[in-house]
Image (cartoon, rainbow, N blue to C red):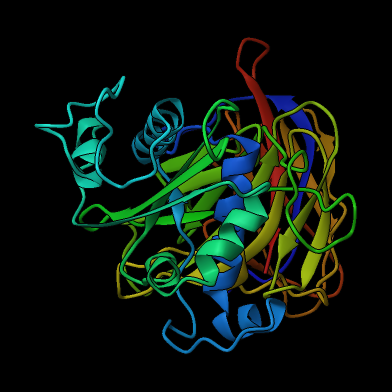
Length: 384
């Protein structure tokens, strides 16, 4: 069954959920700075379509894949990058080798970028590093790497799945602004990852200050919430591990706005095509779906199949009867509707054993009336 359209959340009642599902927030992605996230966003856009990336920068490079999966942030890699950029700046050196006099690493026993990554706790299966200095902006540094063969191939290597960036500004040094990018893969780990932002200036790109924090990214697998989730950072970054999801199953992606006020976001659908959403507070919004790939590959917003706009969102009515609660909503003929309830926004319990088939008229389902001492209960109808 394909989740193609509306997710509607309505009223709250006092009640209980029969089954709770343990979810864990992923935290190893850390919190990049806005400049670091801008570089990641540029890399991930380019990896999605290298031909379009060539058009953007008026180049014609053919030494990189046509497409590659987005890279997820990783805090350990980010720390290795930040520390190396600082060491280079403060010691007025520009090199991949660990800086003599480093404040963080032993240049004798930890002389390489890979040693620095390991020292921060990243156990890589493959890795690469780019460094740059003197560039006045994140985009300038990225374009500098794009126009350098070895650096470009590092950024677009499809074998990499995670990234860290580190920037340090030290005016007494020769170049003032120092950048480090480390890329890697750790075993079979792979992620649903992207950047949540609002393209406020309408330029079709992520800019510093546009990130949207506090958006919970929830994956639903075969009707059940995935065991891990993430909440977007202050710059909009997030990553949800997906290695435990079975190959070939459909995964549906929802966003939950936890900020307490409506939030506008811009979701990429292609290299430079976007969909705009307004996320109401404390409600789930269906963003799209994908089929879990057979290979260990990251997934991002651009990989999603958007919801079908032809299915209208039903208006759900919650009616209290003497001995039960009844949910009612208008239906479209042939559509499938699954009413659900929750008390924790994590595990949703089905209120019917199977989806109800739309008749073109009103559908309804009843559930037990809660006691005054049970937790608040929320209801929704999933429309397919």
